[in-house]
Image 1 (tube, rainbow, N blue to C red):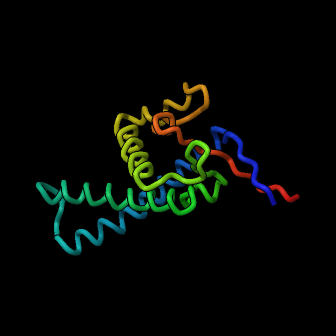
Image 2 (image 1 turned 45 degrees about the vertical axis):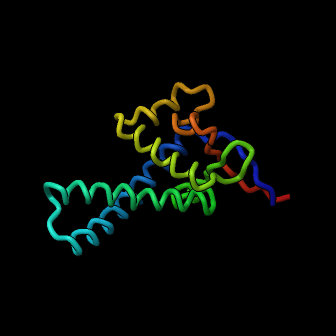
Length: 143
C-alpha cells in the first residue's frame, strides 16, 4: 500500500474540526471533574483561572502528544487527515507546542486563525502558514 497526500476538502476539514471539538468537550469534562474533585468549587476567583489554565494545558497535552506521536488526533485518524511539517513527517516538541499556542490564539480571536484558511492561497490555517506545517488528506491505495 502507498499513501497519497493531497489537499483536504473543506467539508472534510470542517467535519474534523467538529469531531475534534467533541473530543475537547469530553476531555474538558473529565479534566474539570478531576480538578473540582481535588480543589472544590472553581466558579470564581483564582480557582476559576486555575481551572481554565488546567483545561487549556490538559487539552494541549492531548493535541501535542497526538501530533508528535502520529501526526493525527482521533478526529484526524477518522477523517484520514495528517499533520506534517515541511518535508519532515512529524512536528518536533517545540513546534507542536507552538502550533497549539498559535491555534489557541487564532481560536480566541473569534476563530480568525481558522477562517484565514478561506483566504489563504493553499487553504492553510494561520498557525500552519506561520509554522510551515500543513494538513493533508491521506488516502491508502493498494499497489
